[in-house]
Structures are given as structure tokens and as C-alpha cells.
Image (tube, rainbow, N blue to C red; front, side, top):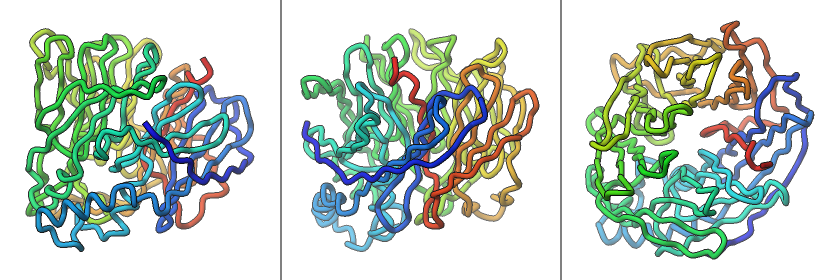
Length: 423
């Protein structure tokens, strides 16, 4: 494992959440056309935001030569990139921040969309590094899992060749390897290898460490129809494996009370250049993992359940709720036991989504959500704003703007919760 230090600039802005009981969290943004990103740290004990800007211009060189080589091998036109993007759009997409994984000693791994390095930020020293796990310069999964008891980072990889080939054949199987990397001794160990996909979006272990789930966020389409994504489920004790078709597989969250129950987001979206195309309502699936493998126990959808970027699972007044960001202006609250709608919280009116004639191309940015520690409130972070709603009131009553958002910046990805960094 090797690391390269990046240029980071830090600033502070006044900000207060007026006593709401939220955990410390971090929110991402990108600066369009600059290959740079800013991460906003919100601390419940302080009345200010720390913002860290990380510059990644030129870092695409870590991956670009390999992609050029593999495109030549498969006779892919040099001007062609996945999802119909231009070359500059592609590298900006690859290096955009998507999610956060707290590690050890105040460090956070930022999940980049599609790249062959990890981005690590140290909150205490306000520094950032690109990490090469040294597994043959392969592409790395976006959102990964860290074992706090052993100090091991679990992640998946695939050869750059797979992404080059899928420009021509988006249904092609790709060789995938699952690894665990010790952050103490810097050694990496192979856990599993087999056929799966590229665009690996999240790797997660069950609370009992028996099952591993890996999702593919395909985003490919043919003739205005989505190519189904898949999730891979491994039984780490027996070696059994299952590959399940999922419409645009996204993220997985485990139930806080039932350690063998999890919830999978099925987005129903594709990527067309830099635009997200909505093909129809999404679904949240409840899956139980047992001796005989995964079993579907229920699912939720709704006519307005579009582009379900974030879902979180938390306790509210004795019940388990799933909160989901529904594009463009809603937060859906779902009863996890029944998979029925609990409540809808509405933001300011957004664009109208119409998928009847063709996929709807989104013109608004996404947003992330986090629940308060007591389960009484939901916070929404988007492009330059923070909104808070008390769940039982059923409406957003608190709004604050983030001062240093510029016109070329936008929220991208998920909010990261940082509480256990202090433990």
C-alpha cells in the first residue's frame, strides 16, 4: 500500500443547527470542470462548518494509460467513454465523491465513483491522500466496509479491461476480486474471485460477519431500456454464492434490530452523458439472509418514488423506519416491519417527473439525509442548503444556507455520519 499527499485548503464558516440532536456528519460537493471537491464537516458541539477542498487535477493519470491501452486492445474508438460521456466528463465523474466510510484514527475513506485509488481524509490533520492498495492497478469499489475490531478494510476490484470492454458489451461478465487490507501492516489478502460486473457500488458485511453483499450500479441501457444490474451475496462460512438481478442496484443497509435482515435500493435509473435518466419508480427490497440463502420478505414502491439516492434505517419511537430520498422533493418514511408507507416529508416544490414518453432527464441535484440521534428528526443536505424536519410534525421547518457554495458547485452522493470517530 502506497500513498500520495494531495493539496488541501481549509476554511471555516459560521453555522448552527439550533440544538437539534444530530450526530457529527460530513457532506460532499464537486466543483464542475475543476476536478476538485469540497467536504463540509458539521460538528454538533460547534457553531461553525469546517470545509476542506481537495484538488485532484491530473490524478486521472493513475488510470488513464491503462484505459487507453485496453480500449486499443478491444478496438474501442478513442473518443468513446462509458455512458456516452466526453473524456473530461468521464474523469470528472470517476473522481467525484460519493460516500464516506469512517476508518481508524480520525481518518475517513471517501468513496470515489469509479477509480483505481482510494481517497483518505484525516479529519484531525486536515490532510488528504490517494491510496494505492497495490493489487495490479485495478478499479476499486465505491463504498466499502471497515472492520473496527481487526482494522481491516474490505473492498472489491476489477480490471480496467472490464470497463473498456463494457463500452462495447455492457452485458459482459467481468472478473471481480474481493480483498481485505490491513491498515496496520499494509498487507492485502484475497477473499474471493469470480465473474460479476464493473461499476461495483457497495460492499458490506452482515453484523455477524457471515454474509457479504456486493452491489453493481450498472446505469447502462439499450434502446431506452435499462440493462438489469445485479447483487452478489456470499456466505463467507460455507462459500455459497448467489447473483440476483436488481434494477440499478444501489446501496444496502442492515436492520438495527434484526441482524439478518437488510434493505436494498433499486433505483430504476440510467446515466446518459452527465444526465441521470429516470425510467420509472424505484423499489426498496427487504431481504432476509439465512441457511438457504437470501429470501425476499417485502418491498416498497410508490408512483413518486424516483431516483432513491439515499436510504437510512433508524429507530423512531419504538419502530424501525427506513428514510429514503425521493427525487426531486420528497423524503419517504417506510415502516421496516410492514414495508408500508409511514409518512412523506415534502421539500420545496421540485421539477415534475414524467417517464411516460421517455426516460426523464434530471435537471436538479440529488440530496442526502441523516436521522437525529433520538430518531425524532430528519436532516436533508443538498446543493448549498440544510433542511430539518421533525418527523411527527411532518414538515421541514428549519432551513440554513451554506455560504461558500458557488454557482459551479453541486452536492453529489451521501452524507457521512462520523460519531464513532470519537469513541
